[in-house]
Image (cartoon, rainbow, N blue to C red; front, side, top):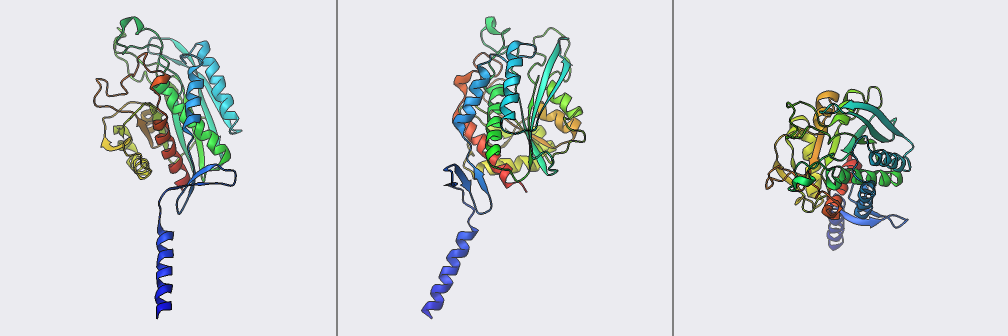
Length: 334
């Protein structure tokens, strides 16, 4: 009788342990950290590496279209992504800004498993604002900004993910898209009649002219202002309108990993960003992970469109929260 009881207890413990889905740290044979659960093995996001990629972008200076810094940074991003995958397309074109300026822009797309039909994409904008119209110092308002958080943070996270995917094959096809000319939109004090669709020019072009004819992805995730200390990401309005299931999946994943202080289970207002045009033109469900702050006058990161958006405002823990959440989503994707 005792033997039978002991056998039942052992089987029960075995079943319980197999059914657990708790996240834990392990290492592969090369000593690389891995996050594992009962179903998937997920690489660990390197926040220091992501920070380095942000720092490298800022070293070129403000990445404003038609400038030498913009051209040099584009070459850096292309070369860096080519070091992680052999499929990189640079989509060059010319778009017209709100003030009539012809902008030479480059959308940079890196693809992993390009022949795979089952795919998603991650995106961010890599340009920086040409003026700092929200700066408290009027003398600084007509000068370009570093855009450490507003642009470079999302790009830094995505390049780090590309580096990781080079060493750890994802279960699906994945594209990393760096959009240009997102931040050259009409300022409120431009003295010109209010115009529509002056922001997100690179994503508007890509949505109407994808880098691959007939391009398809199940969904996309946009990153914007994802590197500030104690950043809060709310469920943005257009994201909930066009892709609520993806929003909920990402936010639930973040909370499961312990990042609930960043990914709040609250909704925000509708924000016109790159994802709006991807949803409405390309018809690909796309969400926006964007820093939203109800305590600021703009509703955004406190240093939005000011000279204060510099490297000092980047927090590695925020980069980790976003990057690790994305890796978990990628490697759990079927």
